[in-house]
Image (cartoon, rainbow, N blue to C red; front, side):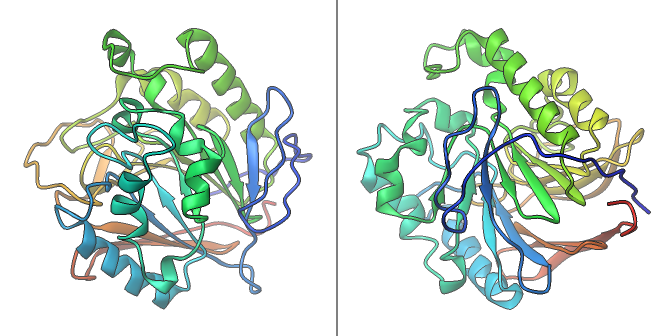
Length: 330
């Protein structure tokens, strides 16, 4: 049984007018926050997809169709994107509405997917205009798109989702001129501030489930393998402040890995379009499941239990599992 100690006061102050829509500016030095309430029974259903933005190609439309089916079955509350939202080089600017609609609005058309989409950026998003996806002009095209900052929190009472901008952590990207580092450079200052803010927010969280979402892998058996910069800098924060799971994309596969020295789970949902790389890496953690193809993840959360399932392009369940918690810990 997974156990977490509760914490007291919350430090991130925000005013929310509508579910997942209107968010006040955060106090300096704190992560912005979106509040998204649970269902009336206190449960939450979430879909997770990553590495998808290919204008419908590479089975993106098939994945989207099945997301719509499962979203209807589960009454999905919102969708998380683990990044690489627009290939190959992000959006060219906040006026690049054609690319945005061709890869997002015109693909995810099911009624069940007309819910907020909470977004992190991937490395391919950073090689275009990395600020465009946070622009009100893009949100005006499709109000589902919720990327209020490169890192922010989705607060759903029983769960807090800490969306983390992982691209600047990867040192090798800083040697490539095509990356858009506006509002990020200098790297050391940006990362130090982000890690401090993340640690503060996690330490003050009262949520039963603390879920960190980023683009890059920490522990992975797929093509890219472990991201050493995240292992060195982000992983210690997750372990120190009791993250239950880290969910990522980047590797175009579906996988579940359990940490060998903590309760932390590493979950990859990066099968939104192009996949089948056929390349695998070793990880020192325990590989529970791996699928080198397209698909997505569902999560169903309550105070006491979290249920997960990976689906393929036909909607078949590839693998499912549950985690439990004592409800007396919070």
